[in-house]
Length: 135
Image (tube, helix red, strand yellow):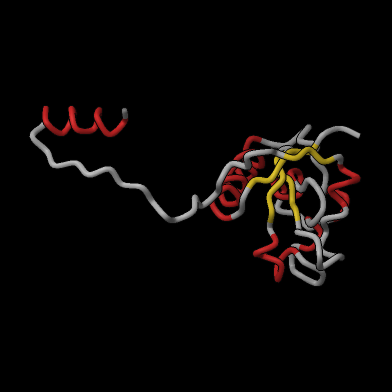
């Protein structure tokens, strides 16, 4: 069906169109079955157990940051974010443990903009594997 539509379009514009199917994986594929983790379950993915992936959540979306374990794993410069929703800390550009929470209340427009930028970076670099639910 799609191939026929492409042929119709190519004939209309007098173009030669060959269907292209990429063999490359998507840079940030959407999981077929999105998992839901409570904050407590998310903590188990802080990098302490090398057999488990390392997760960081932003605005309730969980990213698999295992490929960046030198940053997010134990001893890494951003290890404080691992296994948690780091939304507030990222918005405030803070590595203070007290800021590593999902609460965005009271943030300035500038801080929300910073969080937006972080979220875009994560979306471009790490797969989304699920969402954080309430306890």
